[in-house]
Length: 164
Length: 355
Image (cartoon, rainbow over all chains, first blue to last red):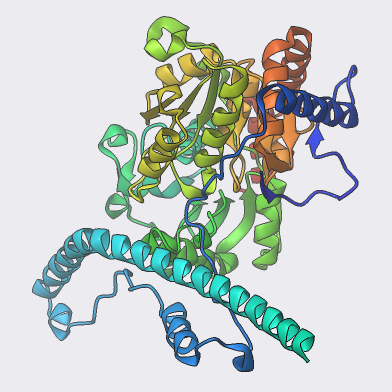
């Protein structure tokens, strides 16, 4: 159930209270006793909590161990691809340097550009999110496949050893 | 006695925003001290357009003009101030790390990165760089600012003296106990972890309710949080109010039973201080500036063990003497964030730089 942990000395209590009647250590003990009693009464909590934006990183497996070199090559490419840019980049236009009209034209261009970005960014953002989710899932699946392959290799070696 | 002009500059100004509120307060202090002082912002929300002027309306009198700039995100304001050779009192409110938005909102991530880069642009302009907390001041030191100090966010006690019935928090008030968190719906605020806590707490207290107050950002995080609550079967115990007016927020703070924060990143954490002011016990994850803001008051935890935290919440909700002691200590702590103390510090900083 422990999802994240913030920096705190390992020997320090993880709940901190400044109180004249109960110390942090006593409070942690009390809470843990209550959890034990609650689990005994209601059973353990068997829910896996997902985390928003969880990203599984590229499983960097050594070349000689790779199940399928092509899988890792393309997976690495997918991981390296940057999300589609959404920065407001506006190429300079010579027309904006024209006196009087240039300023107005520059302002119109910027506003039009921002208007387009406002709508385009919504769909780019959504696609970036889907891409990130898919790549993260593929990374995790590749990691599982690799672990299973390693286990199969170990078992095969064991069988061969016993058959000898 | 006329003291000259010190204007303030913001990227965006809107009603109910902590930075805008602080700018209003500083403007009052400056005017009371005899300075000419206005607020200019790049983006002015209609809710404050009678109080805040657009940047386009500002005419710098000469190079070397004095100004106060509130920095919290990348924008066109720092290049403007640099181009016009301002001498600045920088007030740094922290920038949420771009990593929180990299996959869900690349544009916001880009603005955050830009904001961090613009610290280098602001550095030579700053006579003094103030930060809301020591945590934020460390950012400034890392960015090479030679002269930094801490000026906490100031709470105006009179803004919280509204009667709870001035705007009812609605029917959810009937649910007990009520947990509360205030903050925009954003991945770094980790409202999802509060839903996980609610799930565990409802095993102990089936009527427990969680109210999340805050702007629903466009990244889809709000929908994800609601979906998670539905999947965990606690959707009925969750209310997302969106952004609310001051009176309604005060009503929520006055009628809730426990304020809980799971936020992973806070440059200060104004609602923590507001809860302390209004006598609401606080349980908060000890990330970034949170332990500093709590200053030994309330309950600070350093692991997100939801089952254990549900027991801790149940303990605080059920142990009246413990609640009273927590509230008393929080009231002592919040004195440091009230107007007399923060105003004194602000004027002291102005004197130090000879303004």
